[in-house]
Structure formats: structure tokens, C-alpha cells
Image (cartoon, rainbow over all chains, first blue to last red):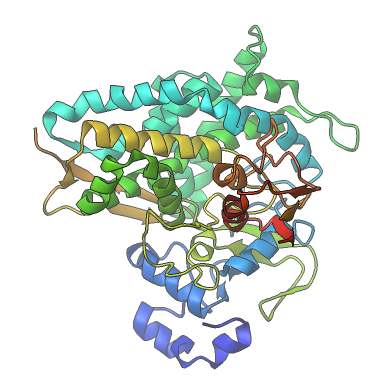
Length: 415
Length: 66
């Protein structure tokens, strides 16, 4: 294991020509999140990075650092004064992409909004959505259970999180979900990256219209009303309208673009591991712990970025003011310095330390909702479809950038 | 056993209260209600408290006294 840049440079396994022979590129000094090789060899690359490259570098665009260990990711994520979110979380951010509040802001502005929004996403409030989510799991399962087969993503995984979020949190019609999912997906993964802003623009326009309409309606006391009510920033000014819209975009983005991946990966894992499935069927109280372990090893958000506000050293690497730094949550969650046998998936793991929901003040605001959706899905799926497997001759289809997503998962079960 | 909950680093992951609900209480925002303070762990709850501490992604809970 290497702890610093110097260790890494001295390690023959991390020599440029060795990496080029093994990975097709020098992933320590010339990494690319959008490289199809990363998509195909995801686990292998993350494990290599966390073990061998406490810090790596990308030459894509203006270039960025990647911080890969549990301890250093935590340090950078918590130190928001040195590592600012105000210039965005995306490396080489395309022109014309509006910043998302509160995710792409720093305290105190960020704190003002989080204080207002957090109560809507607390464990206590989220728990009141459980019955609706459980019912929706069954509504979806009813649509395909008799067929003995389904394409999990389009028939369940991409729908349930959207339904849960739209019905319980946003109160917008689920008929519009497909358009928004498409906008968010294309806005994240479309290549060339210059096309992404136009896809995101559709999402902004839709939610801007919705917010304007809600401003004319009687108050419901929900998160939309809280957003409309707004906050006063520390300089005494009121949060402008475009900040309110971007908050709604940010929440929607998180609500529909991420949980699907953990859910699909968990179901895929259970399709491939009948013995684990049986453990969960025999003792459903293990499901919550399994969800935590699945969240650790199947991260939908691989890495998010910060911008250095001053010159600073991380793991023996000098970073300059203005440098962009990605926090590789996905690598930090499999750090052997912080846990035993991180490469092993163990649903009975006693302590599950991970950074899938981020670390620091920007911790995923929907983490409690995501956990409930995942737990409820596995409970209901195993109750209704205890025996299932991957359709022979198929394999899940993935796409990876700074997010990871599953596009196709073919399942079959006895009718 | 006595532990301290860091006032700035607790960001509401809620892992502490999941594993040690009799030790760590969440406020209405879902953050540790005792953040910024030290608390005594009730006798018999030490193992749960340790599990909650170790699961905190922020390492926001530290041991003050065994």
C-alpha cells in the first residue's frame, strides 16, 4: 500500500509503462473517468487506485487531481474552506451549465439552505413514506411477475426512486418521470460533454415551470413551499429565483439519478448469489445491513469535485490555488487501511464504513430516503420473487463517468 | 464510557443512532442532537456505541474515556 505520492512514484507496479501495459493508459498520471476501460474494469481500477495511488491525476481538459483513500477523502471533504464547492462538482464543467444549489456552494450560503431543507429529509419524516413506497414496489412487481421475466431497470429500478421522490417529496405527476430521467441521464453521460447542458436545460425548464405554478397554489407545507419561502443570505439579500429553481433541480437529480444504480446492482448481486438471497429470506432483519454493504460496493456517485482556494498539500502532492480535485468516494469505500477485506461483499459485516453518500457538509441530503427505498425494494422483491436469476447469455450493461449507472438487467424466474 | 460528538463534523448520516439508538439521539434535522457536547454512554451500551462510532463516515464521535 502506498501512502504518499513519493511511495507511488517509487513503486514499480505504478510505473507508467507498467500501467499502460495493464490498463491501456497510465491511470496514476493520466486517468479519465469517461474512459470505457474504467467502465469495463470498474472494481479492478478502483481497488488498484485506493491501494497504489493515494492520489492520481487526470490530463483530461484542464486536468484534475483524484484523492482516493478514506482518510484523505474525509480530510478534503470536511475542509470546505480550502476545498470549495462553489465552482462546481464536475471536472471540465461544460460552458452554460448553471450551478446547482446548495450542492455547488459553500457555507454560509450552503448552510442557510441545508437548515431549511434538512427537516424535510430527516429519518423521522422519511419513515412516513414507507407505506407508499412499499405499495409502489408491489404495483411495479404486479406489472411483470406473471411473465416470469423483466428488464429490471426500465420496469422497476428507474421507476421506483422517481415515484418515491415525486409522490412523497415533490408532489409532481409521475407521468413526467421518463422525460426527466432522460434529461438527467443525458445531462450526465452524453458525449461529447458539450451536449450535456442542453439536456439539463430541459430539466431546468420543467422544474422552473412547476415551481412558478406552485407559487400560485395554496401552501402544502412541503419542501416546495420551503424552497419558495427561500432564505436570507448572510449579506442580507434574499435568495434569487434561479437559486430556488436550481435547488429543485439538484434534489430531483439526486432523487432520480442515483438510487437506481445501487438497487439494480443489489438485485443483480442477489440474482447471482442464491445463498445470500436465502440468508435474507430466512432473516429479513439482515436486509438493512445488506443495504449498507451494497451501498458501499455499488456507488452511483463515483467522484465529485472541489476547487482549491489556496496552495495545499495532499498525500505528498502539491496542489495550487484554483486546481480541481475529485474526491473518489468509490475508491475510499474500499480502503484496506480503514476496513478488513474491502473487496469482499459481506452482508453481515459488523462495521460498514463508506463514503457512498459523500462526506462533509454536502452529505447526500436524500441518504435516508435512498436507504428506505433500497430496504423496502429488497424486502418486497424477495417476498414476491424469492427465486430469480440473470437471463442466460445476458450481462448487465453499465455506463460510467463521475456517476455510474446500469442500463440493462435481464432477469428470469419460475412462472 | 464517555464520548464527544464533534459539532462541525456531524453532518447527519444517522449511522450512530442506527447502531446505538439508546445512546445517540437525532434531532429533527436528523443530526446528532448532542453534537458539540460530551455524553456518557449508559452501562451495557458500550458495544453498540462503538459500532455507531466506527460507522460514522465523518469520524465525528470520539472516545473521551473508557
